[in-house]
Length: 154
Image (cartoon, rainbow, N blue to C red):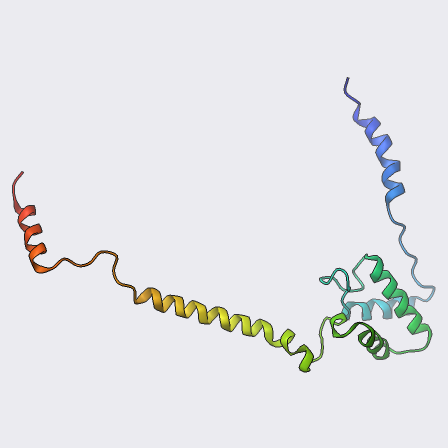
């Protein structure tokens, strides 16, 4: 006997609600939350790496947001908080790392890879243009023989 789908639904809904995470409450100060959102857009989630700190739901991202809130409560401005996080986690925490010796590969790497790819493409295209034909051209005797064979009546 098949179990009715509504029984699965009745069992599954409370289970799903029990597993779901509770949303973290916003700070009591809405101005602080706006500052946090604005600053969080410039910072990278260290776990997700492709999400901003403001957009990430990772537990580490929430911990970092709490650290930022604490820094705000200490009276630090956005640049001081950003500096604190860079000192602690390195330039990787920034979506737009500054141009300096240690971040030069991040800035020049894409252009170097593009130049390398174009160089390989040019070399391959030049090699392809200089290749010998697949079948050698017949010499004069072979051409004359072929012409005679084609001219014969069947």
